[in-house]
Structure formats: C-alpha cells, structure tokens
Length: 229
Image (tube, rainbow, N blue to C red; front, side):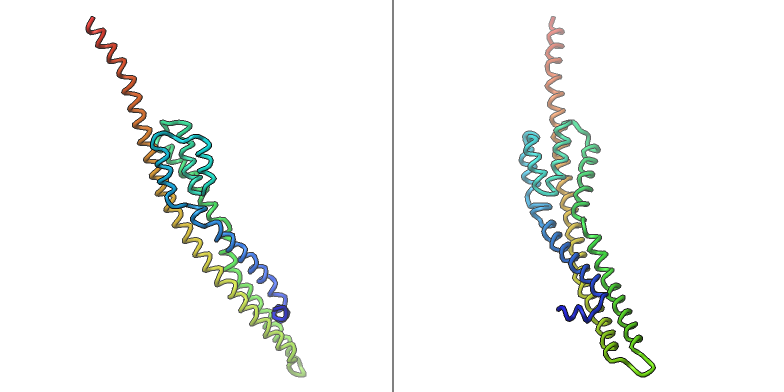
C-alpha cells in the first residue's frame, strides 16, 4: 500500500484525506439516521394514547424529547399545549414547523460535506492526472526519454485517477442514500405532527366547550329561580 502511495506522488494525499473524512461521515450518518434515533415506529401511537385524558407532565415530555428527533418535534407541541391549552391551530402549527426545521437540520448535518467530497474527488484525481502528464512531458529530453521519469509520470496519472473514482463513487451513492432517508423521515414527521396537531386542537375545543357548558349551567339555574319569583 505504501508503495502505491509513493508511486502516486503528492497528489494522492488530498485524496487520502478526503477518503478518511468521507468514511467517517458515512459511519456517523449511518448511526445517526437509524430509525430508532429519528422516527421510531409506533411512537406517535404511544403519544396519542398518553394524551387521551390529559397532557403528560413535564418529565414525561422531556423523556419524549430525548427519545428521538420525532420525539423532539412532538414534545414541542406538547409543551405548547402545556403553556396554553387553548392555543390556536395556526400557532400550534407554527410550533411544529419550527421544531421540524430543527430536526431536518440535524438529519442533513454533514451531508453537504459528503456531497462536496463526491464532487471534488474526481477533480483531485484529474489534478493528479495532469501532474502525471507534466511528469511524462518532463521526461522528454534532447537525448531521448528517461524511462524512470516516464514510468513515474504514468503512475501518478493512473493511480490518482483511480483513487479519485474509488472515493467519489461510494461517496455519491451514500450521499443519495442519506438524502432519500431524510426525505422519507420528513414525510413521517409531517404526518405524525399533523395527527398530534389535530388531536390537541380537537381536545382543546372539547375542553373549551365543556367549560363553557359548565359555566352556563349555574347562570341558567339562577335565571330560572329569578323567573319563578
């Protein structure tokens, strides 16, 4: 391996750095974008079940936020409902949208870097090819070709081109894969947020109606007593 690096010349070092960074980012995103850490299955069902009777306590909401990114989005809506049970639907929707944007930012972290590496690696390989061609033309002399210089130039050109493609192809494939995962998670979060939003707003409306009816009952009894007198 070291002999290959020596034969590839100095242009190989930026490519090696890109390969290390790309590998680290791919592993990190594979871990961070697992379903259990982003949008666990049946989490929204559990949240809807817990909020059937009342809004859960702050400790429960905090644990929900620590569960996953989807948990953070749902917890933001529950915190807003704790603050104001009669919060309007547009305001509640705005709370969910702000939390959703933060979650998307977390999911897309480092993806631009990975995409940049997938685009830059072939160019760095091309740079190595150009350097190799310069070495080849530099081997031309009035007395003929220098076989050592010629072989070294060819090695630089071919090795760097190959390394650039070896780095770029997997980086691009994982970049597109992660993009697809993020888009799918965004759809899941939107659907879960919409369900919780409808649940909280309908719950708030029913509680408002109940409180209005209970306050209207004493007034009606007082009016009937006054009419009887």
